[in-house]
Amino acid sequence: MKTVSIVGTFVNAIDEQALLDIMDTRLMLEFWVIERLPTVGREQREEPLARMTSILAQTSERIRTSAFDSNLHANANLAFHLEFIGLGGNEKNKTIYQALMDYRFLAAKNALISKEMVESAQQQHHAIVDAVREGEREPLRQAIETHLNDSKTRLLDNIKRSGGMI
Image (cartoon, rainbow, N blue to C red; front, side, top):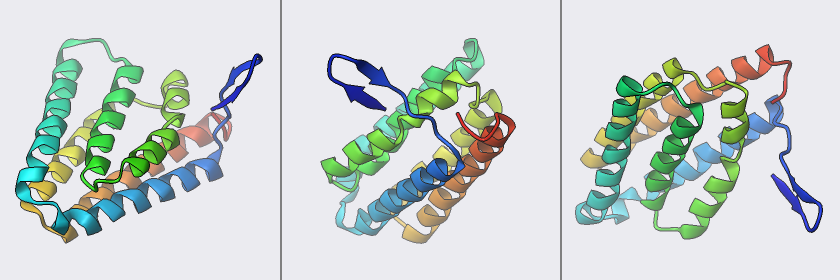
């Protein structure tokens, strides 16, 4: 997204390479949190874990009881990942991560986020929460990698079906 004084705010299109770059950076930031996890005590993990669990519960409830709204689900996904990034204790990383995720509005607007994607992400998010709770880095690394690679693959497939750009 780009804002030009007096002119307005413009959304930049996302092509395949931009999405690959975004996903690589997300992976790097989330892996950084995994490396920091041993320095985060169990007590310090409890509040973020409770918020992550609450986000998952609210999303599950919304899937069951409401018409599908890709914007709401995209925002819940961002909230979940920002809680995870926050475990690393670096506010700048949260700012960077949030800026990277601006593509979620384009993805939601262009119907690239489906109910099936959200349900799959929910299962993967539960695996991430379980791994954080256990404090084991390798299962967490695998859960993050699986989740982000799955998301990348699905979004790339959808971008290709949409003419190579959103």
